[in-house]
Amino acid sequence: MKRTHQNKIALLMGCLLAVSALASCGGGDTTSVDTSADTASVGTTAPAETETTRLTADLPEADYEGYVFRVGHWEHPGWESRACHDIYAEAENGDTINDAVYMRNIAVFDRFNFSISLENVPFDELVTRVKNAVAAGDDAYDIAYLRLYEQKNLVAGGYFVDFNDIPNIDLSKPWWDAGCIESLTVDGKLYLAASSINYSDENATAGILFNKQIAADYDMEDPYQLVRDGKWTMDKMKEMYTGVSKDVNGDGKMGGEDLWGFLGGTDVAACFYIGAGGTVVSRDQNGGLYDSLGNDRNFAIVEKVQSIMTDEDNFYNHHLGTQALEKTDDNQYRDLFSDGHGLFFWTRMDEVTTLRGMETDFGILPTPKYDEAQENYISFVSQHIMGLMSVPAAASNLERTGTILEALAAESYYTLTPAYYEVALKTKGSRDDASAEMLDTIFANRVYDLGEYFNFGSIFDSINTVCQNKSKGIASEYEKKASAFTKALNKWVEEIEGLE
Image (cartoon, helix red, strand yellow):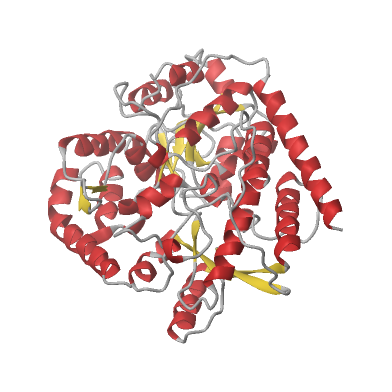
């Protein structure tokens, strides 16, 4: 039995490497793209094709005697497409992701003699369950995935275990996301982590899609080449789409039957702000956190994003609606792009595979820069559809937990990660070699922003408000919130410093 599973894993890996090799040898434009980035911001991606020696997890031999490793994962009504698919698979079914998850689990199950149970729980209910279980000393879940929205107070309240204190986990290994570790470590403690076990953080990475037919109809500059040349900026993007918006039905208002330059949502504020190099919370030379929002460059970024999001003739905000078109749900918003009603479409990577059936070709682009002087394209990892791994403080056997997590992460790095990145996203999701190239650029510099995630003193609410209201100014709004922002941030840090 064990040899059969190992043979299947070897076969799966062979198929993935073959697909990767074919993609890398494709006949598309081979112009190089600068994907250099500070390693502290680089997200977990597929293993390098040139890697000749498989890294192994340094783990002890163990037999967990059929133990059921219990996972609690958030779910959101109406978001069935964003349900958890990377923890458990009942059997092989021919789907690349499902089969990679299944074979990964079987390999680790066989080695350590355990199984996994996955419980999907409404996001607000899961918070209550974790809090009550920890308060009662009840080891209800081995790991829990709550949305980042709900994790702020649990982190400071001592409800999670510091990953640095979990035996057998080696956070220096490539199957643990270095950018996440760097960004979310506070006072030397890490309570939330991203790893190769999951691809929800990859799915939550922001980008831009564009309708190739509309771009061709308007004889536009090649967006791919703009990216390669470092000229894909907010100003360039706006210049391109402003000439596209059109009142197709002639009713004098921009609605759902018309052609929009840019289809987006409230999320554009955060993703464009971070993508332009804007900061909210930064680290000093000693690793301490401080308010870094209040400076001229950050204010200028907000003002530029505001000019985009308040232009109701060209930008449609699906969370708010505009003119003749009411706000839409996620499916209606996606359909606007799929049905050809927009040139540019703000999205996260989860939509790339969802739009696989779209008849008109689309291309994939990174979030635009603030200006050409900006060194790298920056891709924000959005909190709305992502939950990071945490270990509840009531865990009864951290050595077992660490062994299982490290084994799953290491195996995932060589099975699930390439299945997601090379096959589901780059081969099946993208329509051309250039889009696959753009995905490398997107994933080369992913950023997790603590200030946006936890919204200390409601400071990021102010950025969202300003970006969507042309009568507001960021400098005055910041001045109103600065004291509360600093106080809330310092209090949160002090609570973490007080945790043992």
